[in-house]
Image (tube, rainbow, N blue to C red):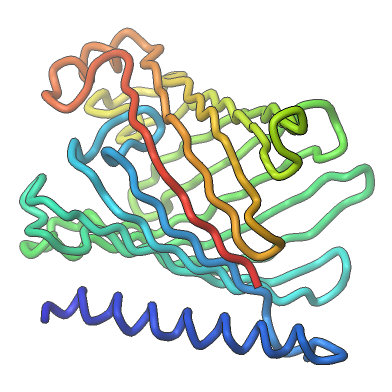
Length: 266
């Protein structure tokens, strides 16, 4: 068994043990303060697309886990991990984990419903056997006005190793579909991305480079489990970015993929 496959099995076992512990604790009269809330998510996506740009043209599976400790009602600490698994041999990833993401951060709420999330994220690419230094370390600041219409927000990301910066402004439309089912809902985040250097594809200049839309149907099975299906759609905006995307055999000026999601929270 390959090392990365073994790591996924170990991680899955830890997730199962953690969810059982969380369930047992919730059944008790009072949840222990040391026990975090857990979110486990599994996605199947038709291809790997980030900010509208396709990095892997073949299907991928994404497993993620986040553990969060609520320090106060307005402040919490969280850690998490993400494994992105390539079932094909796209981009010479050899039927293996093509990316590990590790993060740690804090979330706090300000007056007026302003939610601030700050994360440190390490992106590791096991397929980089020749050590081309594609691993990155960056911090992300996400500010959302949760009480305003469409919950507008802004995200700022800085890769301090390569001195690259990107940001997006975003809104999210949410609608309950009670006329179909009380458990069914629709949401659609829209993101406008700007950045410098590598974030505009092969174009090394600063640009507002893409707009991304993700219409999503969510069905809440019960208070702990939900399933969803979604489309990811991205359009290149900057002229240089459109040209670079079209020169890449995996991309065009408009990219689209579909996904399925299963989420468990405890």
